[in-house]
Length: 202
Image (tube, rainbow, N blue to C red; front, top):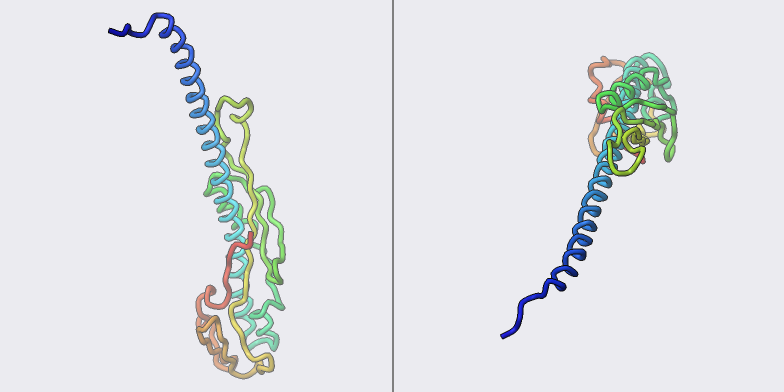
């Protein structure tokens, strides 16, 4: 009949158990710290995306106003459609600030940019909240930062030789839009998303 584990064996097993438990506990804490940081980064990126898109969308709205005012009144109204003429974007900063704030962040800067020939904005933000307390010193006061770029892209093609004083047919990614400068009301314009797309470029 065999004897059970000796007291010496049990004594050797206990330190190993404590050691393994410590490793598992440290791994769990490290994973929690990583998850905290990842959550903060994701929140920062969402805020930056929202701010950049808001700036570009506000400028697209201004672009639609400029286009509506020019059709039938100016011979260069088609230049608003293909990006030759561009609005000032006076409301872009306020729009970006608002969306950053709605995402519990602060707009650190907004710069007009151009990507692949399309105008847009780069928004830089910092979260109002911090990564939070952890075993890593200093994280309780560290804010996450991020940036995003959104651009405005014309969606409509038309005959380059089109007479701006006569009816013009636009092919907006397969959707046909007809504009007659001689019989035009700005309310006749389709939704801004039909004529111009706004999307993240980075």
